[in-house]
Length: 119
Image 1 (cartoon, one colour):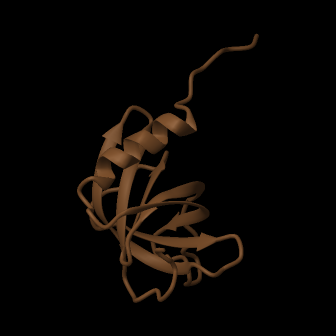
Image 2 (cartoon, rainbow, N blue to C red):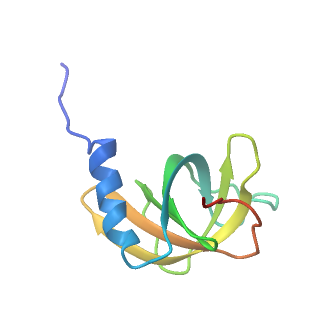
């Protein structure tokens, strides 16, 4: 028997992330699809959970996105976009919990030059 369920729309998620972005005055809307994994996934046997999401806002040092993974302050996430031009780790610096979603702001652990270009 089929069951119906409701999922938050992408627009609603973007609006929720926009609320978090108000704490980051330099944040710019970007909409970059990424995959992220939790923890340091470069070592043997360290495969963490992976999820696809969209970076909704960014600054020179931070990314803001919504995900279904439960993250906490200080967690390290590995971020990678499709073409690999963004492939780095970031530490969670802010979280807001919504029903079924986690709104996240994460700060790059290393400098990531030219990942975001403002006009």
